[in-house]
Image (cartoon, rainbow, N blue to C red):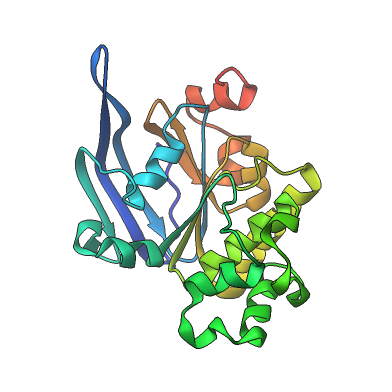
Amino acid sequence: MGDIQDNSHASILELSDVVRSVETVDGMKPIIDRFNYSFTSGKIHTIVGPSGSGKSSLLRLINRLDEKTSGDITFLGRSIESYPVTDLRIKIALVFQTPYLFPGTVKSNLTYSCGEQNSNNDEALGELLQKVGLEPGLLNRPHDKLSVGQQQRVALARSLSLEPDILMLDEPTSALDPGAARTIEDLLRDLNERFNLTLIMVTHNFEQALRLKGTSLVLVEGRLVESGESKELFEHPKNELTRKFIAGDLR
């Protein structure tokens, strides 16, 4: 399948023969089909593919929002089932496609997840906002007075307050204009470089995957058809399905 793994980084998350099947009128259908991959620590991993290929479903399995039908998922050498679900979702944080903020201020959204020691520490909360490129002066702004791009960055800051080992993102720029999307892309690259944060991001746009660099995985009908360093993969695809996806023949 053309896997390119960087051996200088340790494996942080491994999926072995993972299947997720759902019941349909025609019987059980796999939406994730015998998925095998080892995600390396400190890397940006983008998951691309046509609509309905199982990209978001894969993130939900890793975060245990859905349960796999068979196979094994291990995080830091332990089965994900061995972690309390709350602990797992702190260690592997998930940012959704549409940013969801609780009613209230930016500060109240951040204090919800950052723990008592920082809940009244405006300086620490301001530093958290600065990590995602927002001004500390936004702390007291109501959540509904933020732009969509600002909301997405607050959602990112809230996830980062958990100090996760892995940050997963499900098409976080799909609702943003091109300028705001590029800002989020720049932010993600910066977080990866400054904090060695492992990122796993779903996107339908292979050009975005190229801009983020790192490694890419191409998912079609629940199957991993090709993976490797993003530039090499998209400029010299080896799999016919990858070529069709790049050409726009798979939607």
